[in-house]
Every structure is written in structure tokens, then in C-alpha cells.
Image (tube, rainbow, N blue to C red):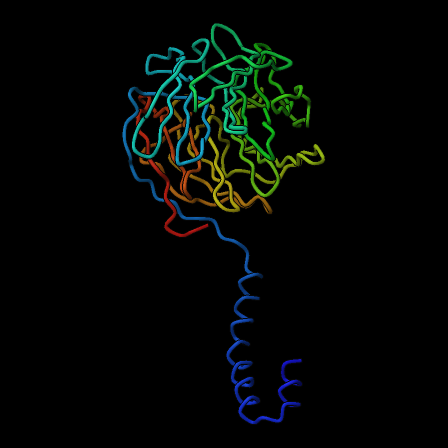
Length: 328
């Protein structure tokens, strides 16, 4: 239409200008089309140390809080004793603290509407509570209960709903995916093909990826994709090796699995894996400074903050960042 209009105008100058414009925009259009056609690439991540927590900590519940902050709730100290501590931290250090109703570990958390919710966990026995923590006021309340007491769960948030995945009720490995949001009852949203403890989970591309974990017989190498809209679970792919006690975070359009271990307590890995949620393809994306399991991994400002964890010989207090050298 533009070329036809210029011809009707009868101006040689205008025709020449538009012709030059058409010539200059064509390559740009081809570049844009090519960029759209090319698949996204995972980031390459480099670890940078930030600071030390007040004490070594492994297996806390964790979640991001916005404004480059995150929360660590409960966990185990270097003597394998459960903690009731809540630490609110940023990229420079721990800023304030509060306490859970009781010391616990093996729980996980999600942030919904600016409030942190902790699901289940273990203390003297497995717990069924849902505990809220308001970072603005420091208030802590028990606000609900799960259908069963369960520890060793994975939790992630998607679309304003927390999904509580797998776990252990003291006897059984659980295969349920529970959904909960404030003001609504807990419901069963899906089922895994096998009972699973200590899995890693993260939401990406409208799905929830459930990665690794421990089955009743051994550590798992399975990557499952759960669709919250339909409740369907499908096996998306496999890890290069069975991994349990890892954590996961999302950057861009990829999921990243941080550390973890195999069946034996001292078999930690330092590898960070990228996972393509469309194909299940897995690749090495980076490395931690030492092998580590039971970490907190939180996406903040286009990086992944990694806090605490268990190295083969000691519980870790370090906080660092996995920083992309190539953007996702």
C-alpha cells in the first residue's frame, strides 16, 4: 500500500525515499523473524559469594518476598537440631528475625499476596499445619491444616495458588499434589505416579516442574510436568542421574536444579542443571563452590540466591548468587 501511494503521488523524491526505506527495513524484518523462530537458551550461571548467615542452616522452608528480599523459615542447624527461626534477608545480610510456633524442618513455603505460608514439616513428629508469616508486621499465625500430617514436601506458587507436592506422613510416601490459597479449603489438584519425598519444584511456563526426589525405593531421576489447569501430570524427561534433596528456581523460561545428592548422605553434587520445560532437555548450567544439598534457592533480580545447605562434611552458612553470564 505504501509503494502504491507513493506512485500515485508522482514524486520521484518520495518514491526514492520509500524505496530506500524498504531496502533498509527488509533485513531488520528478517532478523526479527529469525529471532522469534530461534528457541530460547538457558543461562550460564556463575556463583558469587555474598555473606554468611548467623549460623549454619540446612533444609529450611524458603521463598522470595519481593524488593530483593527472601525468607528462611525453620530448618536444621549444624547439630541436626530443628530451628524455630525466621530470617528475612536481602543480598547484603539478614535484616530481621521472628519465630515459628515451634522448631521444625522438612517443610516448604510460598508467598501469596505478600504473606508467607509454611506447609507441614517435621518436629517431634510430622506436622499438618499451615502457618502464616507477615513480613510487614512480623505476625505469625496458624491459619489452616493439611489433610494429613506431612513432612518432606515440595511447595511452589503458580497463579496465586500454593501447590504442596508429595511428602511423608510418618509411614507412607505421598503422591498427592495439594492446592491451597487463603480463604479456600485444601484440595487434591493432581497425583504423581509414585510417592515422592524431597523433590524440587518450580513453576515455569504455566506448568509446575517436579524434579527428582526420593521414591520408596531410591532417589529419582524423573522430571514431571504438572498442568494446574487440567490436573494432568506427565513425565517430561530424565535427569542425567538420580537426585534428591535439591532445590529449584526459575529464571526466564527455564528451570534450574541446584545441587542435591543421591541415595547416600555424603553424595552431594555441586552441579546446577538447566531444564527446558517444553522438551525436558537437561544441560549443565553452572556449579556451586562445593557439593551441596538441602539448600534454599530463590530467584531474585534475574539471579538465583543460594543460602545454606549440607556439604559432605558440614552444614553451610554461606549465601551466594548464581549470576547469568549469558542472559536466559
